[in-house]
Length: 481
Ligand code: FCB
Image 1 (cartoon, rainbow, N blue to C red):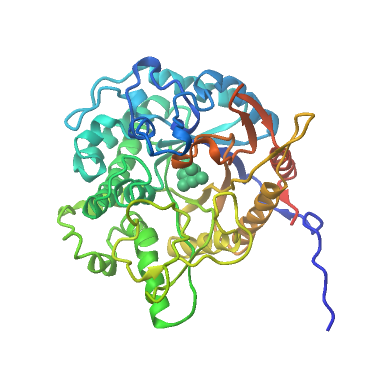
Image 2: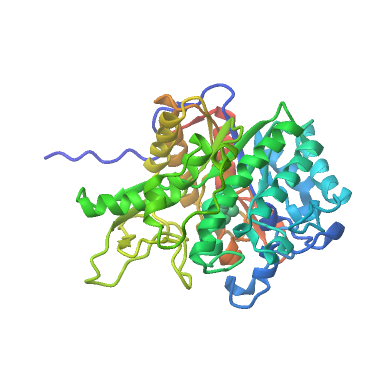
């Protein structure tokens, strides 16, 4: 038998992306901004959570983070140097309406809006297209005190806030994403409690699912009214669910995980209906009576773009209870499970390469998910709004930052995006997560996702080898597998 030795990565024929394909990088407000009290900003659920002992690794908080609030001009210059075509960032809701309550939005902070307005102007001056996310997890704490996402009023206030931001920036911003990864907000925030607000209330988590979907629909309509020419997006972290075998039991485990992570968000927002099997699976937890007549039409608001965030595959199998359960689903061990009504499902830890988060690496999942949503809604434009990896970096004595594992990860996943495009999926953009090392939620600063290294003692930024690699990809408009 002859064996063919694998060709070294980076020596294949270049895979060219279509002209106009957008290469960008993404961040989120609480993870990079710092300056948590500037301009009268009030606490978000993440400020309170991070300041609660035991919630975040190392007791880290976003108080300073990357101090992007004060250094944004330097960061925009860095993006320009790397040749980024677009920058996806989020707006911190408590900067915009610091006095919001469940019953009223309260006054709009001119200083809060001015920060984002200046950021947008700086980006445009550098030839970088801004892409705004309205909610990346930093709910004003006052709304959480009134029930948070388990309370319908939060969705109504969100829509008002979305209209304010779109009204202020819509003359210069062409893409507004309502929510980032509502699965995490609902299930990690209200079921497993590993994310803010840290609640472990299964019924509350399912109410949060619906109110997040409603917030998307109402928010999208508000953006459309305030900025009629802007495109509207929703970003989901879809799971590429892989049953271990083709047994009936493994298939059912896959159906349930797909239902909770994918269809509970895709079906209402893309099709205006909830998946009947998931409502039935969870009937012991809630009767879903918080879905009011007419809600599903509101949830299916205007939508131009679906953002897909992808990091790792989701292998599942039926759990027989004969051995300890494996829970390697990448979402951390909380006091409770985010997987409601899945007591006989487990997430096996497969062999093979992993990132510093312990997440498995399989770029095929990205192509498969893009093809799935393209088949489901061929009219929608798709974007990869996050993809990237945490790895420990090597800082050399002469100050360079070497991250060959991240280069390999990006190369393989960019090739997967190309594969999806080549098979007809309408993917228009790819955003690497993340521009900068930053506050990685419950992991604090312990996990580094940036293509730009941040020295947390000095806040000095240093592009890693992956940033230089990505700059080459952008220049060539092609990835060499
Ligand atoms: C996603 C989040 C993003 C970042 C990456 C690693 O779930 O949207 O903020 O934490 O994971």
